[in-house]
Length: 468
Image (cartoon, helix red, strand yellow):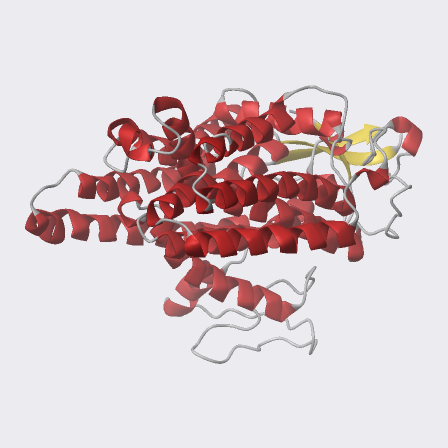
């Protein structure tokens, strides 16, 4: 897929932050040429006003907590089955809006990472918040009504709410109705369709969404489980469909594996298109998630506890360690292009490495545990300490990420919810440096982990043309 981008320093993709009435024109282009972020004809004030939204959120959350405290434990289980999966997904939606707001405030041209034809569908942060607010209001209202009807034991009414919520959220993104950013919603839907059928050329939007879905694999699997219960049995009696949708069903680990399978196939497709062997190692990284999921699901099928404790559990822990370690290495060394591990290897082999300190302006600054300092480029998009924090926090969150890959740990609902929210936050942090690396790669006519770029003379001047 072709992407025309201006050739310039990635740290100079900076322009005065536009107002919501002004588009983001690409350098060398004008608004009339169409390469910009547009409002797609939608009114900026369509979303709920902030005070009303906050007040309604507080009311709904208060009703939910109050009703759940007095509800029957069986109804609490129903709440977790149907409504817990949507929380991390909404959280990720809001985090994307926060990321876009940060890019806007710091004048970072993140839209340059996307293909020219995709850029027109990118929303401003305020618009992302509007869409997230509408979906959140729908979900909170539905959850509050479900909790209330469970608390007063009106189960006939309570049974209506979960199907309505799932149907409404799916219809919101799928129906091509001309309201609430129709073109942008259809772009998201078509991108998701390309992710789940990854045999076409992979654009940057496809790759980014697929990576986000791997972080949401646990809530997506739980949502799949909730919809399975809705379709296979009584809404208020989920145990009636446990055989098909319960923890012992192979349907659950299959759904958990799908985002990793989609991303793996994307890597293979990029390798076929570019011949970049690094994509094979990237595919191998995603394949390491499958043993973790399969071995974890064995807990529901192994009757002998000793066999689980002394055979399957050690294998599961080893697989989880390999998956987390490999994923962390790839995050730092490849996705973020921070040569931490290769530098450490060079030092261990006794090589004399000199680095130039951007702050002090002289070479030879290498102290503390024999690792050279700084480990990063002299020109950075963010404060230097942020990268150190990201490396440390990403390691800790990668280890906790193992928890969400394990179906046999789903019984502790609050703990699972916390870990899925942490994984969404880890992906949010990952995004900033990954976009910086992409901006750098698209300012240079050289390959960079699957990106192939070459100079191209256009009517607007010299630029580069990239393929992912």
